[in-house]
Each structure stands twice: as structure tokens, then as C-alpha cells.
Image 1 (cartoon, helix red, strand yellow):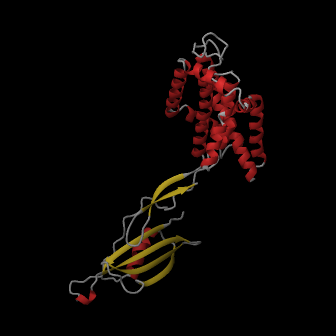
Image 2 (tube, rainbow, N blue to C red; image 1 turned 30 degrees about the vertical axis):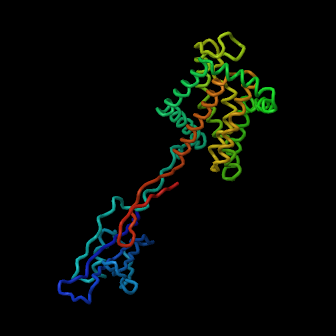
Length: 357
């Protein structure tokens, strides 16, 4: 067991009968550092003199330095060493002990799948389970409720039919409408899921290779987003009971369990690859571009008159909520630890934030 600990000890040198020539008053401090060694530890000590006034003290302020090797804990040797180096007639005061023996903190714990016989399979299981916890957390459910409340207002008022008619008139006949229609295959599950699976498998085969790790992470995120978001998508498609444009006299209104088109599956699947990539990049410009691209498949369904705007919005939102859940899981298992540690600076004290990952 090793300890890394720093003590700063102070004592004054002002005597009652001192003349004015001894002004400004000065003090000494002994800085003792305990460093682990092979067969014990090195105790490094420095005695410094500092002025207590605003005037600069002459010289470097360092009067004595020394190092000794010892096999004792710092608690039992520090005060003895400071007394040995400092004048015996002046008192020596140690700072209060640190809360923890190890300044650098304990080593990061192994992930929960570390002891599994099949760590890769266990890792996937733990992450998917955490994805579900995040998706169905209180915050997630509140946001999901708000989103479906907005979708209900769009569907059961004149917004959907008005917006759909304007889209068919202003966008569908144009080149932009043609572009959107061409994006529909991206949202086909029979194409997207094999691509996601192949990418995740590439990451396993080429694990440790920069390219393989990036492709594998994207594929893994995309698959997990589908696994998390597909069950509520299917349930809400039936629960809302919405129909496609021109499919029913009810229009965009919700009639519970009457139909299964209340949420766009293409908009959900088509947004997944772009949102997964957006969560992996740091550039705000690139992240924003990927977010815009995630809406193209949803717009294709409006262009093809296959879904109302509310149905497209809800499908995209489920993909986004799934991406948030997956991202929180990645942060949870990243091993990042942030804590406050003491930071002595000259004759002052302070604190520092330490992040480990």
C-alpha cells in the first residue's frame, strides 16, 4: 500500500525583543513530501523563509533542503523530520490531515462485465439494460409525454391537414421534393439493420484499430437505439390509431387502436444513423449538419403523402430520445470520475477539480 501525501508546516521567527532591523517579520515553513520508493519511501523536505508583509524578502527563501529514505508511514515521520530541520526553540504546527490517505484516489473499478466468461456479450447486455433505464427514467418519460402531447395537438387540430396540403403544393413538385423522396430507402429496416449489424461486427473484428473502433461504435449505437426505440414505436403506432393521408375519412385524428400508422417507422429508422453519428462528433457544425440530415427520411414520407407531419415528428422524436439514452449509457460506463482535491499554493490553500477517464 502506498500513500502520497503533502504536509506544509509553519512557525514564526518574530521575537518580543527584536529590533526594528528585523522588520519585516518573517516566517518559516517546512514542506515535506512523502513519495513511495522500492523498499520504502523518500521523504523530501524544504525549509523556506517568507516575509509576512508585502515587501519582498531577499534571497530565494530556501535555507535548507534534505532527503531521507524511510519505511514508516508519513503520519509518524513527518513531524519528526520537520522538527529535525527547523529550529528547536520555535513551535511546529502541522496542517489538518487529509480526508483520504491517497491523494490520487483509488484505482478505477473494473466494469461490471469484467469478470464475465464472455465479456463482449455481457458488455452488450449491460449497456442495453442501462439504455432502457435511461429511456424510461423520470426525465425521459416527462419529455416523451410532452412530445406526444404536442403530437396530439398537431394531429387532432387542423395543423396536420393544413401543413400536409401546403407541403404537397409547395415542395412535392420541386427538385427538393424529388430529393426527399429519394431518401426513403435509408429508413427501410431491411436495409438499415444489416448495415448497423455489419458495422458493429466490424468493430469487434478490428477492435483496437482506430477505423474499426469508430465504425464499430457507430454500428453499436445504431443497433441499441433501434432496440430501445422500436418497442414503444410499435406500441404507440397502435395506441394512437392514426391513419395515413387519404386512407381514412378521419384524416389525421387519433382513434385509439383503430389503425397502426400514428407514428412513422421510416422517420424513426431513417434518423438513427445520423443521430448516432452526431453523438460521436465534437464539431458543432458537423453535429448540426447530421441533425438536419436525420430529418430527410421523415420529409420523404410527407412528400410521398404517406404520413402526416405529426406522425413524422413523433417517429423522429423516438429516435432522438433513444440516442439520448444511449449517449447517457456511454458516459455512465466511460469510467470518468470528477472530484475535488486539495491544492496547496505557496502559503495559501485551495482546491482543484480532478477528472479521470
